[in-house]
Image (cartoon, rainbow, N blue to C red; front, side, top):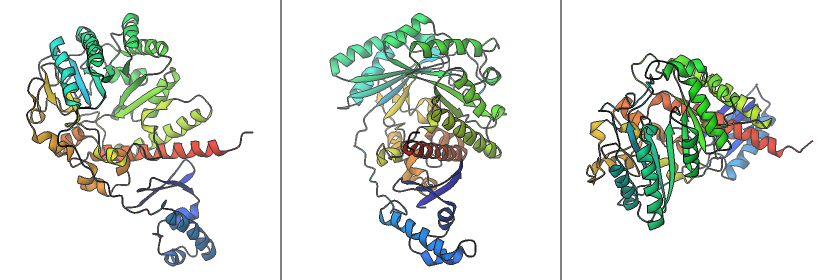
Length: 454
């Protein structure tokens, strides 16, 4: 497959897959591309009669041929060598500082915080060892990342504070620069704590599922009461204190709120501008998303994209994670094909110091890599993850979105197929729809920028 074409929000859009070029065309050119392959002009002319006059088809084909000549249509297959160093660099760690939680979310992949094990908190010592582990494993790489995660990491602020101090000490000693992130349900945030997080430049991912009824149905407190009102209050404190920057409000939608666009817009109406809402991933659950839901989910993404665009053009826009797209094709193709780095560049560390490929693999015994003391002892697993890239996934090699999605989530592939090389199909379909929406938005914004001011 060399070209992907689709119609959305009044635009006929053509993506040249290998070059990344996006073209807005008319209906005639759009129909021609059902037949024309860059070398069969007369076949296209014959096939489109009597719907279109031969002269009009030939003129449009000539214009398409110019794009072919320029390398922007039917461009040749990319040859992308994916080579890895013999010893992978450790770039990022997810520190599970708390395997416990003060919410009881119905869709929690972490077993309400315990990941199928005993509840517990990470010690200061394990936290320090994790910092030393990434410094030792990052080689000459200067930039490193740590994400404080759980469960609910604010249940263990003693270790969080200690690790932050230790990171700053080790930065001064080694010349490394750490990006710190903390993912929280926001319930335990206070003004002094928010001030501490701001002073230490810790990015925040805050959990809110949208409207009150949506949120409270799936994210109740331990006693069963709703958490929405307090979560919104705490999140507003964060956004206000940060000038509405350096955070993401992240939600999850399920089969219970297929109209999730309304949840995204409800968060925007509350004044939040940094938004991300993800589809739940579940098996054999009442709230799981299935192929039968796809038509409505497509409609919701398209509806959200149109509203997002209208607000952006009106100067009252918000940022939606999945609509952020660089049509210039950065970062490099090799990076986009090789994926997130789970299992070889990125690891999760449990409170006991055990190493897993990422936070979603924690508790899956066959994916335990080793321990923070021993390092990676299951040496076959990093090799397996490094080879789980797009070029080794048969269904990805023929997919038009292969240069954008990196082959999907490894943990989801394992959950549904017990095979890292077989992507989770529903996730693929939703990702492709989000990409179409993002391409449409960027195309519309580019057109708007080209229009002369009144």
